[in-house]
Length: 435
Image (cartoon, rainbow, N blue to C red; front, side, top):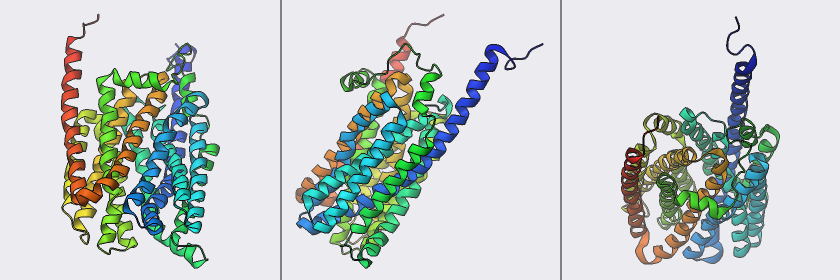
């Protein structure tokens, strides 16, 4: 007798499953390395931008605006990169994003040499495109992931940023010092490091991300060959707005990003007012990044096991607690800003992992890429607005006042999760039973 899997349809199915698992393993390993490299590039840019902009202009408002350009660049690029991925695959979109990040960081280095604020903003905008690519890798990892481990897979890619971002935080000052030792102006070395690491990420994706996970997933019939992938932003936005779970998923990512950026855009300036060194500021950033990324595999496993809604309650609570603690810390204090930013980072991780998982689960694969692009556009765009507005509000409300507002956003997520859960549960209860 023949057993299932020896010949015929069973053999094809088993072979397809084995090949899918093999491609998924290669994809995840590739994205872990590209994400780590891109994380160095991202943080090396972020940690010095506000400080350099303040050195050039003498204005805290302009300093936070320059830092916000990183988010503006990422938001602007999110959907265009998603369109490239939708039509040409993940590799083409990620490669494009990282190469533009390389170019942007190089322009920022030139701005540091020439002391040009407009050129600095332009360069940081370009580096922000590299950030958009970094964020998109979590979705690339989910294209072939089994449903029962999808959140864990997303969280593993998020976790990889721990390596790159921690290194970027710690060695950013060293890179600046090395640059100065060879005759470069202050902080230029950080941008040179950023440009190199974005280029490394682009090379990793180009060489190793084969076969392309999204294109491979479509060949497996997950979407059906007759279904055309959605590429229209308006259509994708309509899909999100028409689905309560999708609205919550995007809303959770927005709240997490707004709280994180709103606090982080001001914290280096707040600590500098207390005469704290760049090294101490760098370690504060490291604590924040450990909260954002280090525990993501645990959070992903909990999300797969318990569901997205409990994780989103926790996300809102952590954002509220972290922003509130930071708000009460004076400029020369360390415990409050270190631990407050750690909790905010942890809340961000809960919100982004659970929110991303919920968004992927809500739509079939032919609709996902466009929806993901719109979701990231909303998330990063809201973060950019938070960065800019925080700088303006800082003048009138101070560090404590702005962070009190950020704490309120976290509480809003808790409320939104409760309301959405009730709506979704009621909708399921009223759906007619099928045979």
